[in-house]
Image: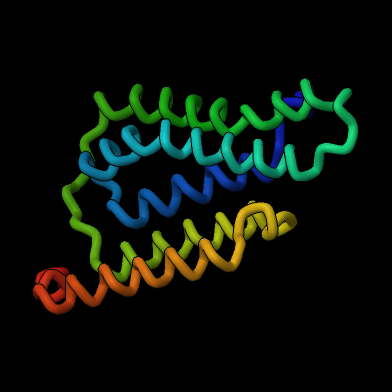
Length: 155
């Protein structure tokens, strides 16, 4: 049973699900968002595991075990998908729209989860050119949206 537990993958999936539910709210819309987000979440977890595995690959004999561990986020996300899909037909939640602070908190929790999961291998994920290019792109999009008035409607 211990072979099916990878704590880093489990923390990634559970914390990401918590951040999605916090950002979207616990309602029918939040459950639908969670159901559509779980395949992407599984793919991101597998990708992170693959990059970590390849950056730490010293012995090719460990490749099958490493690939199996790399696929565990998909297993965890699939289990959550099955539980969520089976309970969504029977349960009615009160319609509550999340506030902007909830969305920001969900985003911060997801980013902190990504930092935790990749904490041992930052050089494999971040290089200065990519960080600078993405930061400039985000800044330009934010300035463009601020000028066009999109941010004023997000209250």
